[in-house]
Length: 283
Image 1 (cartoon, rainbow, N blue to C red):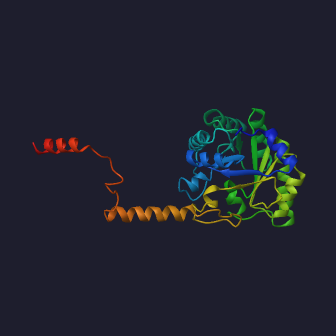
Image 2 (cartoon, rainbow, N blue to C red):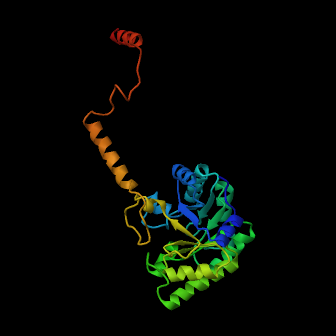
Image 3 (cartoon, one colour):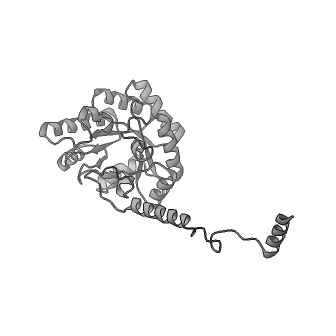
């Protein structure tokens, strides 16, 4: 499978083909997603909650992102990979934004970086990163790095004026040079309005069926992350339950002396070698 390019994503939009997008944070998950044929993988700063056990994405560092992006690239060498810019890796200045975006490309070999927000400051960062030759995906709507300002993990754009603000942010992000935009946690009408008016691919996570493609956090859709489940998540498996049951069964068998079974799970010595070994022990 050849890695898709921005030209192929644009062609998919033109042809009405949906873009399939999932998060991954490690080698094995990325490897399975590439086998499944997903179009894009996002190494999201959501790894802070899904992998590192934080309550928010705020503590995630650039070193965290680089390390996890490297693992995902090794698992999915032929898939388009987007690396998330963590909190305060781009807000301070255009120079910081370019340097940190460059780390994800140079050290982790991502194809694109993603950052959150839609105001003038973010437009400046997108423009600077894009002019440095790095692909940028925008992220508007429900933006976790701004949850203090938007009042938590809540759907956005539910009033007419709030919806228009997000539509205008999409226009500004596109004008700044983003190659694509992720729209999160907005009503279907808002996601569709943005996609209908954009000249670039619009991906949705909780933005309805009218976007050009869909993203889910993989740990949500396979039932591994159970701290909370957003309304927009569909669970395609309950891997968390299967894993818990497997761990319980293992725990019980070890405690009862049922595992390992020496006839099945252990290495053997020839009868002669074992006899000699026992003789040596007895000396």
